[in-house]
Image (tube, rainbow, N blue to C red; front, side, top):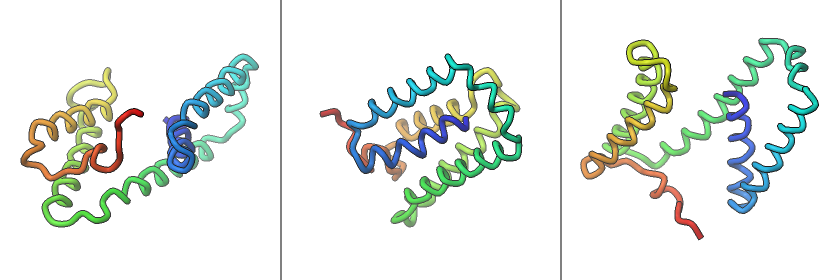
Length: 141
């Protein structure tokens, strides 16, 4: 959604510049602001924002997030690039096709990501794909 996208665009640079220690404080602060806005019933003012403005905002977020994901393709070549592009294309196709042919009850991006994650885990020996653990440390302190 637009709100989650806006949060991701703000939180990712914060964590990369200040460290993961600031993530909890940022989330608590954002949650507190949302609770206050809800208690004060400020949600009714979103009606004053025209639909084209909201669509432009969400599309702008999509561009920013998409552009940030493209950097993960840099440095890939040969089979690794082909596999990564192929997995990306399959994921996008599943996102489009799952609601049409399978179910609308479960979000298609969730199903697509879970399916491709399982696929890459099963065929990890045959697929030359970077994982989050290859890009950054995910170990706790």
